[in-house]
Length: 312
Image 1: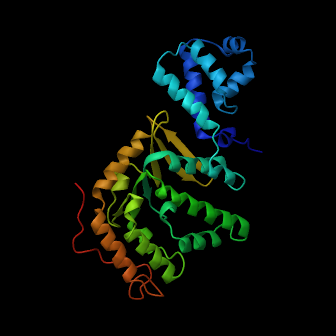
Image 2: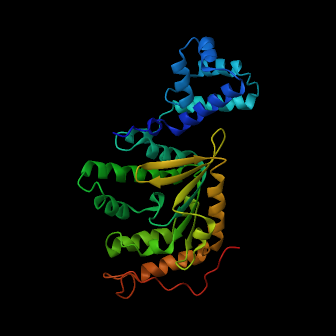
């Protein structure tokens, strides 16, 4: 039997604090035994502090910062804030019974981000889905026979969208591949409602949406091999890129995450601008019929607007 990856059960922020503690100890040229003797705890506990498996408490953290000669007030303050944040439970933690830790971390990132950038090749991002779209997805998905799980999934996704109701909601930039506009997720009415929602997002959502034309292969030139999201976080947290896999979400922190941001910029520049994207989405919605995308031809791409500006 394959071993379970324990890090999947450890919150991202606990892993980050643990990694910071390891780096501080390493810089101070101290061993686990040295720290164990200083704190009066066994070496295994110190190791679990550094893995994030056992979150350190503020009194012990202060002692370690003194031991590691961390005197910078801002650095000490950031680490203490980080430590306290780990112990704070959010509404999303109540869904840990139904989802693995990597997905709960995604919701935490959405709640803490200053800005989110999403590149979607296959699906409409969950933050922008209508209820009808969600219900169709979950009730035809791999857990279609589990009504309780489907209800929790819809409930969680709907709750995630309340992030836009916060006093200072995150800025959300979305690149949507044009093919996604032609996916028949549900009835014609459900598809039309979803497309109209994308075209007429409320101003307080702070969303910029651009469509990547079918004919454009900029993602391949940029080196993108699939969809991803990028989260800009405030200190003490790093910027994070997220990639969804069949076994859960993968997270890449800065500085490695910067390549995702650079690729996003490259693709963003060749997309239809926001106005042309809205025009294309509306035209696709207006052309829907009961048996296909346009004029009874299933899957036929919508005619591109006469003016499809690109952002320089």
